[in-house]
Image (cartoon, rainbow, N blue to C red; front, side, top):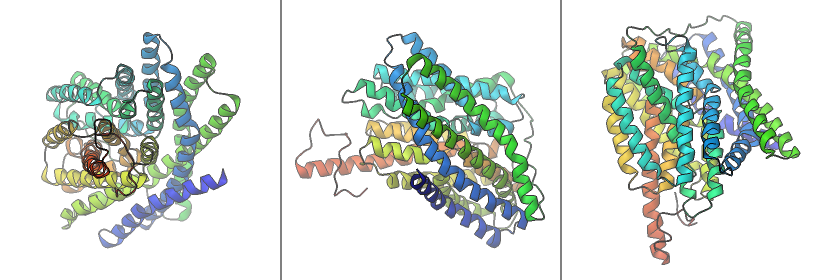
Length: 509
């Protein structure tokens, strides 16, 4: 166990180191930051490494087997109504437990109390998790549902107040965070394993994709009802620290707050799991022990991670964004944003979970490093779009509508498994770091450039969720071309091999 934890922390360190160095170099070369703020950032980065290592270990031990087991057991029941009810409750519970959503809700003053936004998003996820499970059981093609629901979504956007559209699209991204993603991904694999037919592998992914649409539609309807206007976004207060003791005090003061949030979040999930176990008796004693230890690692890891990024990263994001935007070097925000996005995505805990799942389900045909590189390119493109939109004051729908149109058209030409992976990736990339670094960074850029925070800063999560849809499907197109070429050379091309995941050792992905 110690060896595995060491490997997880080492992996987390290699993921966090690049973004840490980028911020430190920027604080010297582009805009000087207070020494106290830099010290808080470094301590936050250290906590992030430890927290991410513990969390990923906990996800492997608890969240993944729990989600897969529930998925298998759920689809064994012949009672369709029971499947619908349990899926809805699960979606609602794990969404309310998602820390990313709580961060976003606190930054949207138009809806008060913030629990109204959280519950609305939870209901959206619950409904669409039901649809996602039924899709697998009824063998409905994912691309068909995506096209239908995104058409409805953009139709709703027409009636949604302009200063609420970006918030709605952002809510779809932050919903799928470190608690939701491992559970839903594993649940999808569990549901698919019951089918066992030749097309089941292609349907292994897609639950996260559909669960990202529900919150967008639900929040849009909430915006239509509330019709918010003229709301000011409360900017985060930049703490003043003079000594190393002040830095430690800031983190220690924040720790109880995040302890409460994480305990409440995981308590709901643990309660649901215990009820499930009492009814189904699915897991054996040794499995329950392992899951219990995994929950402990998840609890500690998430607590350390959230404390580190919330206290250490938000101030740096705000200051960097506002200072660079107010300087003559404001256009450097575009390449700087691309650089940050490229390396930041690998520090998201849920990304590691997705990459591992993709490699496992494809039997190694889609390696983790290929997924990582593709997602990094997508994140870089998303940040370039975000910075350009803010600096030029481009309406968000001018980018989202053609972007989603391209992504949905591509679903007709890409192997089905890549469609699910691509749309799942969009939700997975927009995790805690997006909420606690990129969103404050975008807010700082708006403040420094004199832009409207509500209509311009919000939307960064939506772009982060959009870019992988196109990038991963492009990877799927390239993969399919190479697959057919390799199969043709080997004399294997036929109806049975076309479009499937087949491993060719000589292929360089």
